[in-house]
Image (cartoon, rainbow, N blue to C red):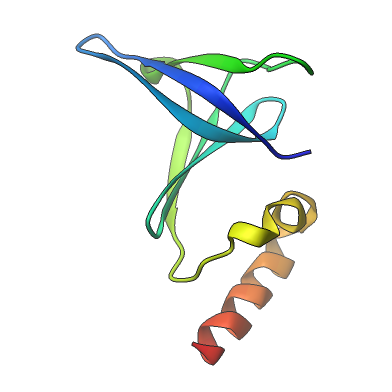
Length: 95
């Protein structure tokens, strides 16, 4: 189940905190406008409300989505890659 947790980012030059979506026990999503950043993080157990992210040890990638999919996070977690691409193509065409 997707839920919001606190993230503490640690880098050699800074420490920051923010809210992120926990998409799976070891995967977070940071959303900023149309940019979505997914990070592999240490596993977060049920009941835990935060995660420490060491920036140099957490693999990540960023996507740009021109659409608002806020209401569809549960679907996104269960969809396969082709389903996501198909839905993005359809929604983009309707925009």
